[in-house]
Image (cartoon, rainbow, N blue to C red; front, side, top):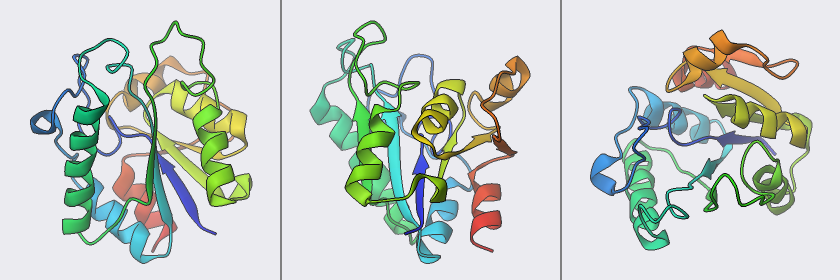
Length: 177
């Protein structure tokens, strides 16, 4: 099975240090929806793995997160693609859960649910914690330079064999030529 795991904020949509708290605040990055459509049409299963500590911080609730994700699903579908599943961590950074990236818990769940071999899974993120979680789960980390990606690259310390691409469209062009 061809499986791609995407971080959400900074990879698919614009990120915000104030959090994406409503559907109105969710805005796709240029080319991201078409990239997901391209990957979908090439037979990839698309899964989103995202930390959403805004739930724990009470900035929004799970129902609002569902509305944000419904908007994302519609936008991707309108572009001709699909997101097969969304896995999210609702915990705060100090809760010590196994699912909050950089821990690999979300990836472990995804791999079990989709019965995927780790070496076949590309995991795209814009922050070090995305790449660390992917690497810890045995997936192939890809840093995109959108969102916080440029700062992540400049800071260094990327997991071994991390691939760097300009954006999700560049990843899609390479994996689904």
